[in-house]
Length: 362
Image (cartoon, rainbow, N blue to C red):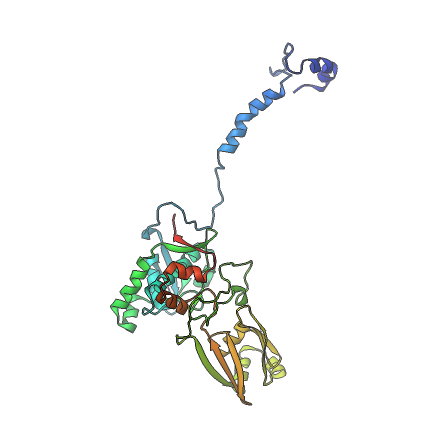
């Protein structure tokens, strides 16, 4: 570096010889006082190139499940821990064995093989996403990845129990084949494993996830879509139930404080709003307001896609269409699509908007 005093005394001289050195003078450390700007750039250039070419040594570990060209993950690498609340037991299973037991519990073996394949992919994606900690809470399962409670995770049945209940080896083999033919296949959105929710029957149209659960941010693959097939031929499509006002009041007393029910209950029900799929968004009984899903839970209804009538002054009649929360894939719809010639990939893409279906890699 040029000392200020030296520069002030020799600024005219330095200006005159901007591009050539006069006789060098040494500093106390043996380094020339005057160094050209070009020399500094040349000294720094290799370091700059190294910074651009060589990647950082430490990368943040990603939670993303990328579908890539890497070798497939072997069965021995994938083990899922499962909490069974009925037995108060945590067990470990190879992933594909677990998926087979889930498909056997969640979907009738009589359904089309492409529907069974779609169910297998959904079940596998569900398990892997929990194993990676993307959704759910392992503390709810005493540290296990998933549980066997269908209202919380996925239903599950052992092969032994399946054969005891259904007594059909060929049915088990059909399910096992669907799982084997989709081995390691999962669904991703923007490279991340999705949360593949599903239900029994959509009633003709599925539901937005944020109409059922409070979610942080948008979930673009769980939006309301119309079913491309008719699901009305299934037993799960429609059901009519009746309640007396006394039965409704009794259920309210189980769910709400007695003082609130006594002060707000009256023999009237009004739907206050609907969701984008036509399901009940908000409803009131007397002056007690609740969400559509809360009303469904209160009366143990199949769906929030419903119509209410009053055949007489003491009776409330409710007709529901569809079965389940309505979010994601309709299992009856998947079966109907399979019978119409759709393969499992088309089925999944129909119900999960914008997803990619492919093999999970390391």
